[in-house]
Length: 359
Ligand code: F0G
Image (cartoon, rainbow, N blue to C red; front, side):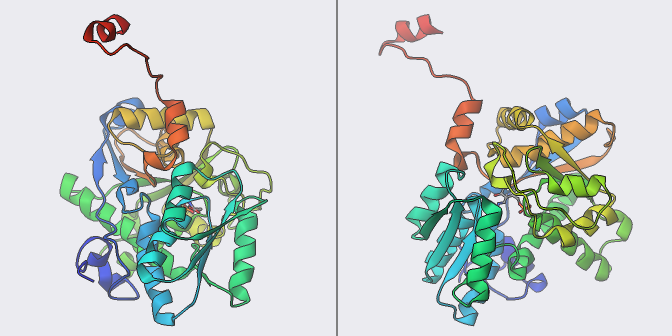
């Protein structure tokens, strides 16, 4: 592939394969966000927008690595359970690798843009009568029976690719401000990114490139209706307890059994981070606020900003911290949520005076 030495593959030395099945993933923008900074009362807030990846979410970073490994293994079928974005990314990368893709989705709980992507990229889509955690149980059993190669974040090669989010944040922050961030605030579903970022920091420490004290505080945000990780952090536990009833407008993180929590929780504790739950209304407010800074994200992504605001109100983040909020998916993933959060349209006649009258 021509795409070597760029994006995710700029960090090939830190990855288990030296080239990927690639549609040019990574190298996403780190934006300033003045409205968010003003609302939070924090001088230096930046937004790492993973929605700017090829299929519109951070999943591409994991798939370029994971699908490459699957290709080398010579598997016949790739599979995942998904709240939507994983299925969109796997469908695209499976298409590029010419390997059939099976996706299991919770029926009625996946945003339209994501299903459209999985369908057009050619995945076989099964809608399961159950939530995401049920879907993952089923697909894990299919993988254990040898029927498919699993590409959820239980697959360690996925998380290897997602480590590059950390490398890019550190490099881009240093280029922009001369400093590394003090804190990274991120939405949590299965806690794959939290685990991946922590692994990236630990590797930098092991390589002598970073000290323990320099690791940014990993700060996870969940929707109040699906917050097993917050519950675990509040109790100081190293494991989560499964929530069987989960609900949130941020369907991407409608997850009750974060499978990477045992790897992610030590990262929260050892970096001096925390976890916080936010209401759906606060998620939508944050989505509007980001949109006002020109940054279009889906609801789950806005949870990071909602979490920053909530922690500021509680006095758990100080005004002089350098904060990076991770926004994980693009606005167009969930057009219905965006339309509902936005303003109404105005019907007008087809003439200039009519338009001016309506204004
Ligand atoms: N944000 C978005 C937009 C997501 O799609 C996901 C997970 C997360 C955050 C949570 O990330 O699992 O690393 O804590 N989506 C998965 C999916 C579950 O199937 O697309 P995590």
